[in-house]
Length: 221
Image (cartoon, rainbow, N blue to C red):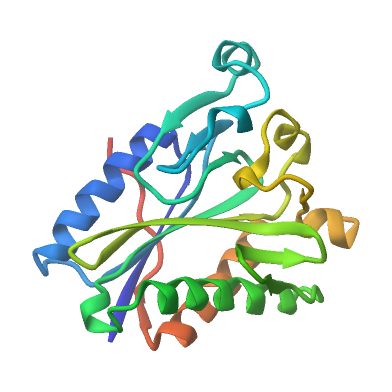
C-alpha cells in the first residue's frame, strides 16, 4: 500500500483544519491514498472535546495579547499548545484498509514517535493510562485524533525545538503533576527539523506497512 506525504511548512491552524477536511473527504471518496501531513503552526492553543476550562490557566484575551490563537476542535483529549519548532503530524488514514481498532491505531502512532526519538539517542516510552510518548515524567509527544467513517484526522505533536515556556499557561493535556520536554531540551542542542521529519516518515511507513509515493506539496491558498 502507498501513502502520500505533504510538508507545507509553517501553516496557520485554521488553514490546516480546512486542509484536513479536504483530505478526509478525498480519502473517503478513494481519490487519494493514505496521507501524512507534517507541518508546524504559529503559536496556538487547541482544546479537544474533553477539555476542561480549569486547564487554561490564563484567559484567551491574555493569550491573544501574546500572539497566540485559541481553537476548540473535534479531536479527543484536553488542551495543548502548538508552535514553531514542534513537528505536528496529521495522518489521514482509512483504517478499513488497516485495522478497525482505535486503540491499535493510537499505539501504532506512539510506536512511530518512540522509534523516532530512539534514532536521536532518546529512550522514550509509553506511560500507563496516559496517551502519548514520554521520557520519564515528561511528555515528549502529545496525541489527539478524530475518526469519521474510519478515516482519521488530527494526530500528534512532537516537541523538537519547541519553546517549552508556552506550556506554562496551561495544564498540558489536563495532566497535573506531569511535565513536558523536547528533543532539543533532552539533547542540549537544537535539531534540524528536516532530519526529524525524515525519520518520522520512515517509521510511519514501516509501522503501518506503507510505501511513500510523494514527499512534498505546497499549501494551496
